[in-house]
Image (cartoon, rainbow, N blue to C red; front, side, top):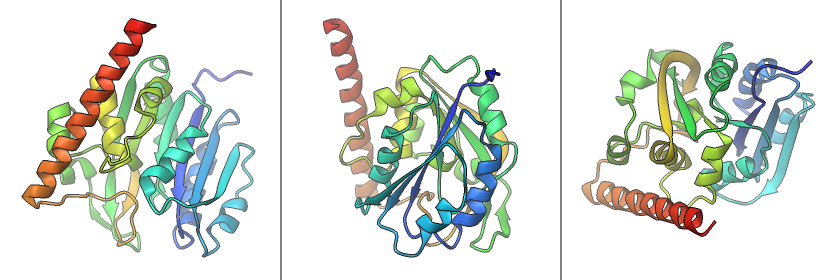
Length: 249
């Protein structure tokens, strides 16, 4: 029987994640429906990460081994390029999803899969061993919508994001020098559609030295200025490209 919900592609970038990935996959796989898929793009792991992934016998699992990016941005892009479904969900290798996460995402996207739309969900922060150190990522980061706000101080956190296929189609290809993939996707959704911040905790975000997603706040003035100029330029160029394509089409 067909599901009333859109099919979901969970896209995970891995790199030597054997320490935490069993717990993360154990929190994700039970939430997947038959129509869903899990895409794992691995960046040259040598610690048994893929052997662990292969133990999870989900029919919709696709593993992309032997990638050589040395960069989580393009590792995530590789996973996203192989995704087929209407709703894209990003997953880090080291967090833990709460049981409500995918059902909440499905409900939010029932009527939005054909439009440019993204959501950002809240979560708590834990230390490396899983002990909670802050109850809310939103409060910790001052999260909220807005292009200028998030160019100035990014609060689009990839491990908490889901977005529609039209959003992905505009965001690809990722510009070569974006500071992080989640910033770019969130700004694209903001410029071409809508982003909703949902203040419901759906993840235990593990904060440790090797986190793929981080708070990423570099307060050096020159770094901040360069990042803001770069993002603004990339976004303006993508808007212009899409408008030109629409006129020519």
